[in-house]
Amino acid sequence: NGFEFPAEIISFDEDYDVMIVSDNPSFDIAEINSYYRRFLKRKPINYRKDGTYRMPVDTDSYIRGKLNIDIREKWISTESALKRLGIPDLQSVHDHSPENDAMYIAEAYVLISQAREKIQCTVLPYNVMH
Image 1 (cartoon, rainbow, N blue to C red):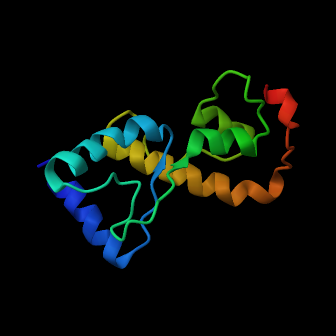
Image 2: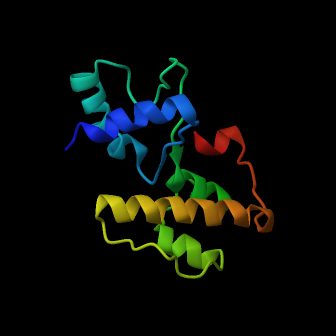
């Protein structure tokens, strides 16, 4: 039932600081936001129940930053990024089913976050991007 998930998130807002983690947040949360608007008559999931903004974590952008990949370089898959970081295969399955992909993305984010000490980041000058 499509109505259970958004209502469940709302109840989580009361007890937890829910974090949205996605490899493509603009696409992934669009359907959830549609349910929020149509059926729950509330702001998008990007807003907590108390009205404060909740920033989604874009794992693709996060990976690009961790690996110091220039923004002009072609997209890199999570699998390739994990290999470049020396992270072994994940327990989660990446088969494009929503539930499995959610677990895969979350597991990858945690492991990549833990690898942060090993990575040197370089800040590009502002004029490089324009």
